[in-house]
Length: 140
Image 1 (cartoon, rainbow, N blue to C red):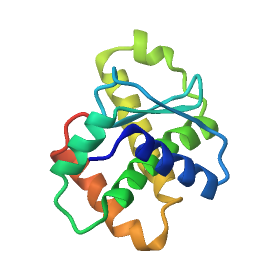
Image 2 (image 1 turned 180 degrees about the vertical axis):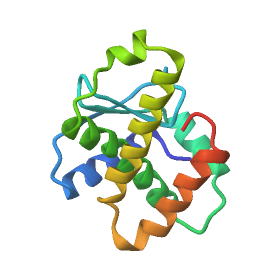
Image 3 (image 1 turned 180 degrees about the horizontal axis):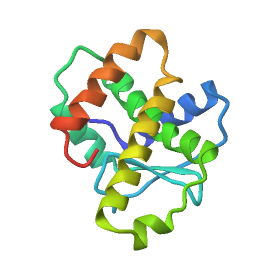
């Protein structure tokens, strides 16, 4: 089991390696293992959901690397929002189809931007997690 301090250390080291000045914090209210808050530039994580994610993933990868993959994906949101200034009012007031289209675009961009940061040796695992996210992993 990874504790809060263990996950914080992985996030901190990943951000240092990438020379990114983003905040991170534990938040027991989020329903996903990790999320990114664009307003505060903060990666939030729920260590219980991170551990649940790790227990559901059946692949030959270290738990530390799987957590890094989660972090890369969240950084992908940061890079996407930095590059694309979305009108987030669409998420609040848009029609169902508009909302779904924007969510899909943001999610796809986050995976692509996150992938651009992944070390070569983790690309296969990152891609596999992305595929699993489409069909198997709830709340990720």
